[in-house]
Image (cartoon, rainbow, N blue to C red; front, side, top):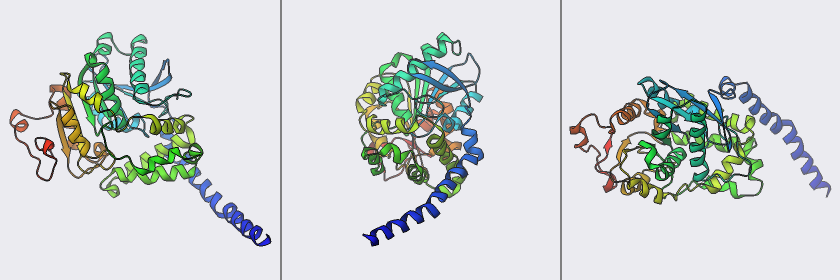
Length: 356
């Protein structure tokens, strides 16, 4: 008995002396970092919806064609700045929305975070923006929709249910098609997951996954640091993120929205997919299934990039997205559209896609 007490005392002493101060130092480092403080301040304005407060950023000419932009699962609207700003600069009106429980949007209590929750959030947000005079009736009626990752899956679900409102649909590595989910997602099913993810342990787990979204993480150290600080703010400074994150992992159909893709395939508005060829988060096999579900869609494969291709290859993706918004095709000419440039090995259905 005395031996066990002695061992326990040593363990407690080590934790108190070394581990707790180290963990406290991690939190202090984050709280004092300029990027953490930047993300703690809302970048835009707020609107009230039936589900709660929604944070949004609006840029570009007030009466121009509207582009609604949706982000991924564990980030916020700040990540979409790389594409939103250029869209506004060429004359479109861009509006980015923080999903419930992300960024500075509130998290509806006891909500089930599936695709329908976010589809309704987008619709309710646009209704509220119309009511407050932020957007016009014309912009509210029909607009371009652009989504990344989880936001891409939400965009597909929205477009399938509200096809009459969609001018074009741009999808950057969208979820919703069959693929093997990362094993780390299973952590949300263990007891006390909320307390683990809301602690320094959760921060470390999420931090460790961020560089995997990049093919050359050393080249994008600043971008990775920014995503880490955004994650730290979500954990330390946001009331609803952990609950929303866990609910999303438990309830969102990340691999089971094929029927919505097929519904979109039955419509006529232009659809444009962009995928990093080395994406290990939403793998390129999903691009095969996306093309099968929406045969008329265009697909741009980006060599040497992963899930965060929008940052790794911004100089290639942004011009293609801008062309697509303006003309309904990302190709620079009819000749380019007719000249496949993908080389083997690629899935047969992707052989007609453009790769750069």
